[in-house]
Length: 418
Image 1 (cartoon, rainbow, N blue to C red):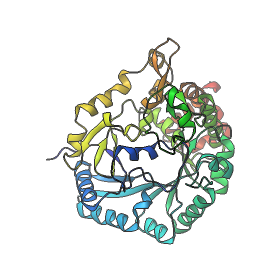
Image 2: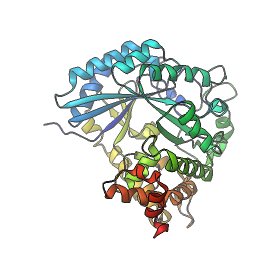
Image 3: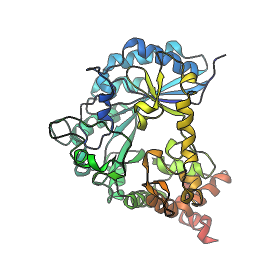
Image 4: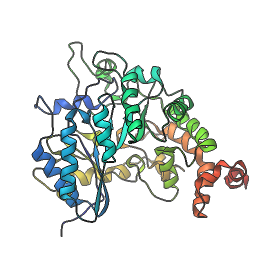
């Protein structure tokens, strides 16, 4: 019997190719890793991937994740083939579901009908109201993309497609948390949200190029690597990030628990019970790998770099790939490299030191490897702790977390009330 794994794979059918040119996008430069002028997953690679992934996955629901670049550039026929092959290779006790992350600019009636018919979960990248979204999310002509995105988003809604909004938190929107949240909730009717901090790490000598959208004066793109201790001006300020989340949480906990679902808040409540559904705040890395258009597999979507290439699905099975020395080293370093400041922090069980890609500052003890976002995490977790304790008490009593919307219940269960 083949070994089966609790494995998540981010598959990139178009590699780094995208029809937009968002200024903060680290992945656009990954096209430089390959000589192929047109980075597209072929049918043989797709078949091999789906067969191997489903063979390595457990019974029950198995989610296939499609990202980019912009995955819709691969076209509808490719994704019809995805559905066909998944049905061919799934075991009787497996239910295959699909999720795709898109900028939504290429969504039309045919796309939305297909995605609804096959119950895709569609993540749409939107950074807030028009001015905040258009600050960095531009097309190749340098123009904002808000109207294009909203057109596609509304087509998805009209077709009944399950959607969530992925919002990056950056210098343009970091001081407007509640405004961003209300825009999504009230104007766009969004009920599932996630907020991703933009941290563009860079060496001092490359900072000027990074500020220019990672392009040199001649237009050549600079390959992004997780190196350096400087950040671009687009990057979120750590404390502003913490305030952004805390302000949204206060709005959410007063009005929207049980009707709006924010990944950051769901993950925090899960952490109260020792469950870590989001890799950023899990004790170790290693269950979320990335696969490029040609079948190359990397330890993480944020570490698509030669040093962290595990091999190719054309040469090895997924159990073999995640058992390599490279993967073992990658998996264990997250916990082993925690600073002493992290180890004695009261929020460690919630935060777990954050993503290793952001650990490039110095701790209060002078120790290297502190998370850049640490001040923000500290503010956020300190702010939400009383309500998280209250909701955890509700869950332990087999009551719904949404009961916290009752001010009397909230007051009675928060630690400060005792």
